[in-house]
View 1 (cartoon, one colour):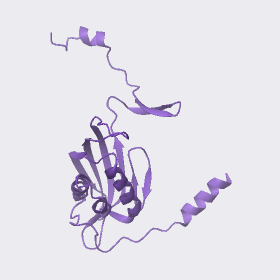
View 2 (cartoon, one colour):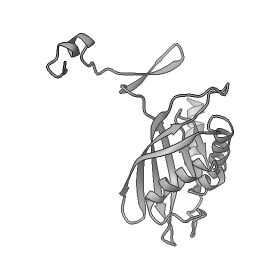
View 3 (spheres, one colour):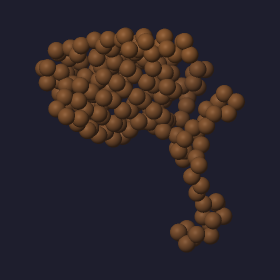
View 4 (cartoon, rainbow, N blue to C red):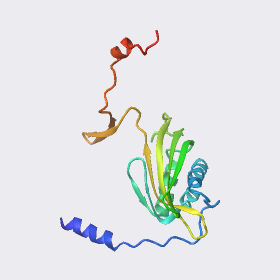
Length: 191
């Protein structure tokens, strides 16, 4: 309990950096959706610095396995590690993107993506992965936008949740579909 109280006290004492007057992003993000376009461009160029400039200095980024990177420097460091290892020859494809304004100076963007060409720790090729990126942006004084918080999540096909067993997390579904025999007997199957 004492540890929790200490953590809560520290969290309450945190102060956040003010938003910059001008964007560090090059090119500037003139609309929230530009974050997604520039993210894909920087990712495919394996340019971790350009990717980091899409976010405010004290941004939060949660990756596909729930690791939280706090601050632009951490985001750049983690992305560079990924580019130098798992994603050396990989490409990121944007499948769709949407934006939602939360007033005049804040917005959320959501994008579906696919990564092809990732390798495992031994350098062996892996299947393509799909996921969803969600980012919250703020509009700066100069009219440009920057990301404040971002979360990237893998899509687990045919799953609606994750389960944990023996220290391993795996995708699962509680939604029961028809059995193969039921599908075969269905009028929907064209012989």
